[in-house]
Amino acid sequence: MGKQETRVEVEIFGEYYTLKGEEPEEYLRMLAQYVNKKIRQTVTRNPRLGLSKAALLTALNIADELMKLQKEYDELAELLEVDRKAK
Image (cartoon, rainbow, N blue to C red):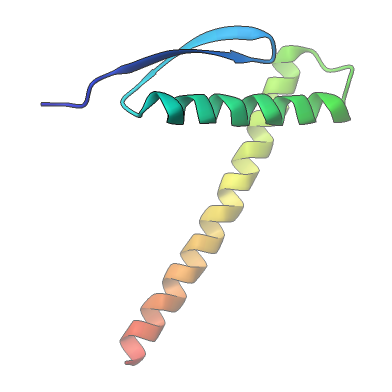
């Protein structure tokens, strides 16, 4: 049997969205809060942006964060593997 679907209404930059997923409600709310914070930071730096452009720029910034973290993770995993093989 699969996990129970969670539905939660969240507010992101003044708009309301219903999120659905298999993660707990608290997790989905945390994601929405993170995205809301990032969009607000983007708009603070670029006050003339509309919502769609701010959302796109924010998505690119979050993707950049993810790629950098993935690279760090891969480098650490490689170091651990080399260390494991050396023992």
